[in-house]
Length: 331
Image (cartoon, rainbow, N blue to C red; front, top):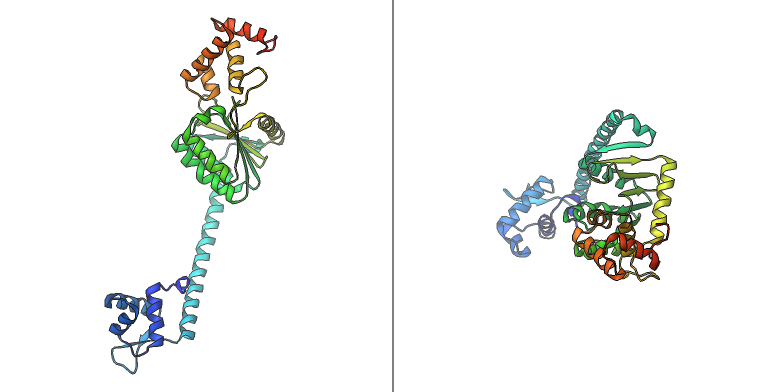
């Protein structure tokens, strides 16, 4: 009961026993409490440090427990002193942190004052995202076009998302349909949704994007290497457009737990996207990147669609897709 005041369990037991049996020595205290002689002596040393036992004036070489009234006053005063010292350390740290932030702000490029801040390198990006996580109050909206998560990315994302969910922040994430084939990613998404996160999927996404509180957005500078450099955008007009883009894609996306739906043409969203990309002349590698799948998987989907169309070339597949109504005539 007194651990919060700096007394461990054994010391508390010995202190209480000494109050109840003032004449008991080390051996008797050990017998009553089921403790060894060394444990009793260790507890007495701890009580001596706390000034809860003092040398006895009546029994030479023995110690006595101070009264509970004095003992508790000593413990509370000691705790108050510790708290005051801790508060002083916190205040000193806060001042140092404020000075560091002020100095760092002076080193930021001028573009940061114009609604655009460039983040160079994965470490800088992760540090900025961690800061945004602490500052976010209401909502995070994310495009995740990279396909299946790696164990490293899951390990990095889990604590940040847990912090947000613990604060009641609304999390909405849009993944690619291809993540349904990744057990690790599905397990992570299940963990996320069990805690209140919302997840949907689409066949393809235009860019990686994280929007925080509808007031800031992080986007990669290059789609080819999204972890190299990123931009932090805070301009009102830009955020309005990005939020509208997210809501539009979210409205057409499917919950991850739902099976892939087929449209009136008998195509899944992923297949419909492949038909459009084939007709536009994209390679298997380019299609794979857009879908977040391997080139082999993209090739398999394309081959299956060509067989269903009865086409022997991609050009012929485009023509027949238009005739069958899989593509608008102007495509």
